[in-house]
Length: 201
Image 1 (spheres, rainbow, N blue to C red):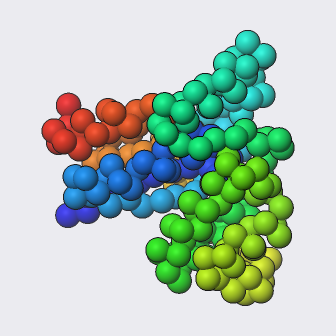
Image 2 (image 1 turned 60 degrees about the vertical axis):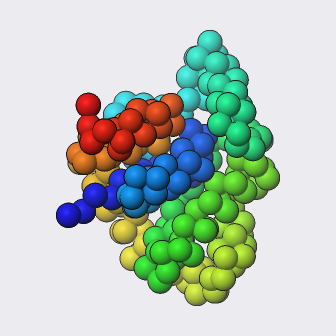
């Protein structure tokens, strides 16, 4: 029986970053594994009517900017809000799927590196050169990756992942599905832990 958690996220999502630092450890505590699915919120928002949190009215966007840092402090995760935000993350998402097709652990290492590069080191993931450098740092061939990113297959793969996410009701990032039960937001991690502990509630 497949009991893995499905973790949907956009690399530009601050709350997705926070969840990414905790979700594998949390799942492992209860003998579960996690499938990571990078998606593009821009595509999801066309269906959900959402907008990037920092592009809402100032009374809301100012709160979210404050809460990103506060939530990171609460969770013990380094966080520096990027100077360039929000950004497109299609290069990073496609790179993840290319890496995953070769080595799951390398893809996971890249995902952590990419998230930390954006939200801790302030590197711009919309820059292809940055993505290639991060992939190279986890042992990937940057030239082969650059060639793959220019081909249509990875573009179609990411498009299909986004479409599947929407079909499953994913409306933002992070979005985690466990045993068919959806949880939206890094602040749902305590509920997820309780669900995993009790088998549902």
